[in-house]
Image 1 (cartoon, helix red, strand yellow):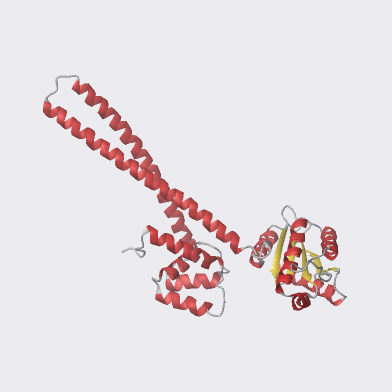
Image 2 (cartoon, helix red, strand yellow):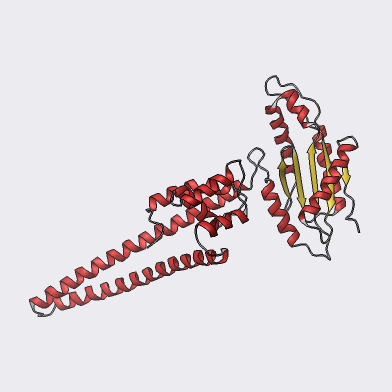
Length: 345
């Protein structure tokens, strides 16, 4: 007996409910994750729902390990590779059915045309009435078969269009999951993925990527003095400056609160230092006005740390080294750029 008995309309509604929940988690949008959240919103797996509610009651998000563990414990005792194989198999079956329907339609058309021609030829002869009646019935039956095949082809086409639509929705959900809503920059999760991908492609014989971490100076004082609306305006202003200064494969991200990062895959340390200084001076020279009285608020500055990747570093070690340089900039008076020290021997 099949596990899922939902209608097409029910499953489509569950999809709409599932995508936002999936996008809030720290796990990728893959079949394992979809199965977990599908059964959660469908209400067909009580133990799974109770386990998820317990894990997320304090705002905790589910990472890859937690999601996979839930799937294996409450849904099926298969691994992720098998789940991908099932998905690929389903897509192949759908493609094969579509192709078979197309072939069947072509054969039915050919047979129907030949039968109609044969019928006309018989009518021109002195064929007996019973023979003509039998041929007429055959023609009618063939016509019905052609209609059924045409309906099947239309249904399959609608299904394929729906699949394309759902894939686009998943892509949009994934993009939303990796984007900071306030600034439009990549969010922390998106940056972590970009950094991991970047470092996986580093060749030890080449110049490694560079990284800039920047933090708005005295941001708490800005919020306390002017309010959170002005604080948000400052964050968006800094984000616009970062966006204006990144290009190509560069990634600007909001790392958290008033902290930002810029990943420069093909930039040397000196190039990163020059860019960091440009960002610092541009922000220092910018002026932000209050929305209520159009008056300028106090000068906004940022502190920055810069480093070039050293072979063998993990992503966390790379970030920590740049972050230490940022704190040096803060400790030495803020509104400055500090180059990180090399990894100790």
